[in-house]
Length: 304
Figure (cartoon, rainbow, N blue to C red):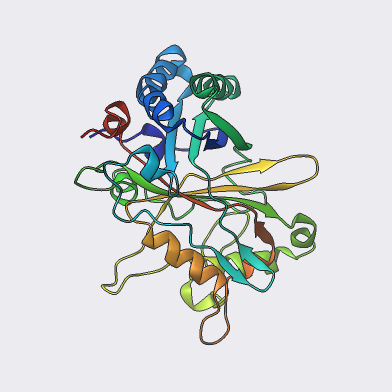
């Protein structure tokens, strides 16, 4: 099988994220349109070889069975919404998710136009966000984003299903966060560093003994019962306007369990009442679960 290139792609300078709902009685037409996606991705790479374009389309949990009724990824399930008082990570389901990334903003937008033309009359655009590289790969909070991402061949091992009909597919979880920038910027740099568990300017992670039990890097660095790291591959990018800033968070993994555990550990207090204090300074406004199948699955319309 061939994974969609955008799942394991290295970071880009620009991105467009699109969320759609499929119109009633148009699922068959959408399935046929998605069969053209691998050729669309290839055409963009060939037309603009200097842009390092990569694309991903993923199908939402609620739409999968009607779009591909013949088989379902074994672990595809609803987004694991969280709520603890005013700290909320909601579920906002969408039928389709597109991630369109390039090192040229114009090429990313050309990709948007081609996707919109392909799906015209079949879907309704529900959410659109433009992402961009901020400084040297930092979040709008000023801290380097994705520091713990797997590198090299490990990216595919973490992100892609290993075998079966859904080999080289990936479970995606997508959230749009809006940062509470005014509140965050009132903090001293040392207080910000303690919340993350690493230094701001030179991106050095604290030693474990120095990390507070509420530090983001402690709450999201998890191991399973066998002691193996529960990793995800992040394909996140900042977004911003004159009035608001935040992060489009994209998790890719061979299982949804790793992301679910991380999100629970961020929001749910442990026995001592500790939770991820970064959640006091950013608000998740969307949350949806998807599966991004292989190019062969798309091209064959699930008939594998």
